[in-house]
Amino acid sequence: MSNSSATVFTNPSHFILLGIPGLEAAHVWISIPFCAMYIIALLGNFTILFLVTTERSLHEPMYYFLCMLAVTDLVLSTSIMPKMLAIFYFNNREIDFNSCFTQMFFIYGVFLMESGIFVAMALDRYVAICHPLRYSAILTNPVLAFSALAIVLRGIIFVLPSVLLARQWPYCKSIISHTQCGHMGVVSQACADVRISSYYGIFLVVLVHGVDVLFVMASYGPILRAILRLPRKDDQLKTFGTCSSHLCAIFFFYIPGLFSSLIFRFVQNVPLYFNVLMANLCFLVPPMLNPIIYGVKTKQIRDRLLALFTHKGT
Image 1 (cartoon, one colour):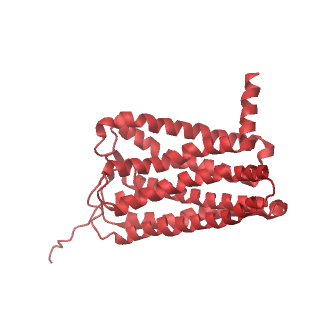
Image 2 (cartoon, rainbow, N blue to C red):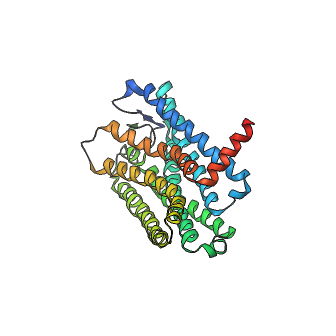
Image 3 (cartoon, one colour):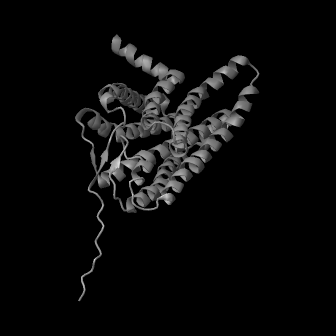
């Protein structure tokens, strides 16, 4: 009998996250603004959840969607910050092989859910402004529950194949030049042709997010026409003010993320640390800004927050 020369390939037990390549000496200093953004995100989003759940006047579809946004912001930022701080402060760069893909799933799954929430919020504003008399009849509790379930399932259904596909590649390298298990950063360590993973990642960015942006634009076209048809200038400004917070949040969510993803895939001369910093900002800035934007721009939340602090101060 002849001995078989075949060997069983074994994936590494863990990956090594390098942090921000080229800026290792500044990791502690970089952690300061990142920690500040994370703390603001925690305080802001928990405040939104507290205000909406305790104030009956805020028990409306718009604020339910805002609660969903706050939850996804908390999960998204918390998915990356603990490991990032472990790298910055304790030089703990190892992440378990399966934990890496779990982190990848939460990052991109929640990111996609958040995109779906912005679409739902745009549709909410469309119904409120263009069909105000039918608002309560259209956005009923069953419709809201179905919308929430659809948003969650869509995030899982679209992202899970990407993670499972990345998980099945054979990995002969384990050093990731990043602070997190980003999709392309991980699959670039595989000793196989990973073009299908790259193509699916582009599909998620261009098609899924592109469709979401189109839905948002399709909603705001009639909204803007309805606003401009209002007879009084004051009414136009007041109605547009109800949409301004949503438009600001949409801008800070889609534009940096799309810019970072396209730069990473198609521009070769950009320093690696720039890509890493941009990716981290895309996952930290929206969770920090969303509660601030909605707190400042939304009168009901602003008034409730002021009343809360005034009551405590008396």
